[in-house]
Length: 352
Ligand SMILES: Cc1cc2nc3c(=O)[nH]c(=O)nc-3n(C[C@H](O)[C@H](O)[C@H](O)COP(=O)(O)OP(=O)(O)OC[C@H]3O[C@@H](n4cnc5c(N)ncnc54)[C@H](O)[C@@H]3O)c2cc1C
Image 1 (cartoon, helix red, strand yellow):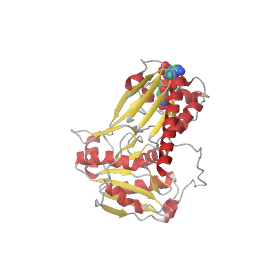
Image 2: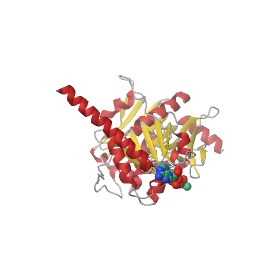
Image 3: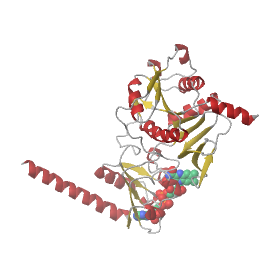
């Protein structure tokens, strides 16, 4: 009986959806990452890929979503949707799910995505796999294989949602690359009319306060210099900051240093921190435990600086420098400054 019900449900639910998150009217990169993985899943199912956009003055992003792989974009655009309110956003998503039921629905595992996904899944009476790092389609059943790290990253758990639809998952930012743009790609834009009574909530938006630390963000910078317990003390981050500043990089950290109170949590890279995919990642005094690697192993070039040649990070790294970071890092900074000085002299000579 349960199987008959789920088969009937599966037939009524069609296509793959992604939630295209925007902040302050701008799409964030997870929208393009979800389009990338969503397109692959939709192709495997021979199904359509749709993006759902909610906000104010966001309709202009529909074409960008289509050019990055969406066949259809559902747009909810209203001044009352400018600021995120979980109740409203999940209500709109649930109504859309009822009107045009999807088979799979992917949302970003961002702060906004996690909260709206959980509420939507409960209201839509379906299952949700959280913080997934791999997604694929089962050949036999067409079900979503939603893979996520479990038990502190020591295991990868595959989660199936067999009996309810849509199958929902939140996807870890940076777990997938961005979709390629195909200029001029055509698709359908569906403008969803939002009735004013949909904005009745028990919560209200008061104010958005931006934290301005003046530092580069680790998730968006293409170079990251991270420090670990090998720094020995919080003061060691002064050297890491100088290194990052010289290189034009963001400052990352291992959990050991965050737990020790040497640096705020927003710098933490790893399973319980943030995922980064920079072109260049420096790991200074970081051993490379699996939970740290979970957040940075997709970096293009990894440079490890460690006194222990047997440390896992030294094995993983593209370039391993065996030595005391308090000798190696100042030497690299000195060389960078020297080269930059040469370049300035060279340019000024040319311009004269
Ligand atoms: C559920 C769970 C989630 C976790 N999530 C995360 C996470 O998100 N991110 C994370 O980072 N960790 C996480 N951890 C912790 C993780 O297991 C490690 O404990 C942590 O990453 C170790 O940090 P570290 O490499 O800085 O320290 P250590 O493992 O102590 O390594 C220090 C390294 O510095 C080297 N060293 C020492 N002195 C010097 C020197 N002068 N010069 C150069 N090298 C030197 C040593 O040889 C050593 O390799 C998690 C753990 C659990 C159980």
